[in-house]
Image (tube, rainbow, N blue to C red; front, side, top):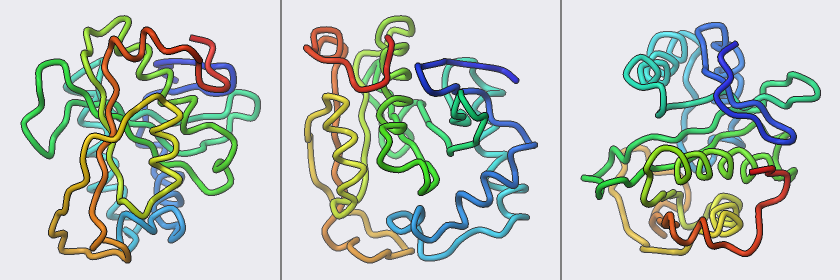
Length: 195
């Protein structure tokens, strides 16, 4: 197991091909995928397309990519966290995107915030990151509440003409961001994070 970061309650480690069933279960949960897709991938699609795309980040970089989010006390696979250069538009220098996808049993416990906090803190303190953004659908209140708990601020609401139009797409996407200065001078540390 290649551990990338640890927090009070979580281990963020590299995803591997052995995670195919856990990732498939995560991506097959219609509640998890509610704001992402109207269809769920098959196990073969996860094995042959989704997971290789995640693993490719680790082949290209020790720093950026997707990490399995594991509960320290139980070893339970909770989902994944992502920390990578922005890919949907030309990024500003030092601009990185953070994201997460956790199974529903992990919701409401602060795991999304805790894992993302570890990634942001490491990025700002050790990797030269200047700003971090996150985005979600406007109707996905749970996710943008995590962004706010991370100290991120609303930057813009925008519309994308997705082929897979999930309910609420017409309200657009929101982008939140936090700068290195804002992160390092924040007055409180998100719950569960020891950084």
